[in-house]
Length: 167
Image (cartoon, rainbow, N blue to C red):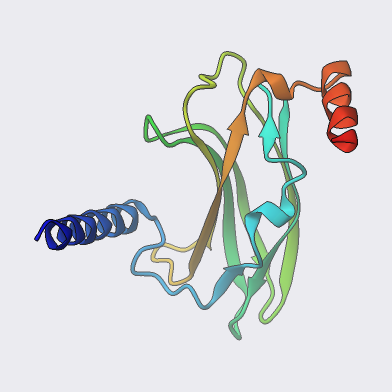
């Protein structure tokens, strides 16, 4: 009996999570097939472990237009605080044209703010959507980012890397 109740509670929590995530998505009810962020977001990040005041770098992010029409798109990169449900930093590119059945690559550098709460959880989110009054195509991806002063560049980081190679 307890297992059935636990199972039902898990199902309900899962459904609530799915509904919450889809309600928060700016891409809900929009075609995900026309515009795609190619691959896993982590593949484009230079590093996922950063310290406050360091740069989060996204390199060669590939966005694909899979339809037979040129698309004006907007690309947003957000450092998002999961615990507070808010954006911390945002970069937004004005409209960029991606030709029909083609792709473009983008580079972003987002500075992690000084004084950011290192005990909270953060996501790096990338959204791409049509720059039209009623967009039909959209995609978004996110990945966890670890923010901690111990990742600060310099001697300490090199020392940790050196000992990590020995172990």
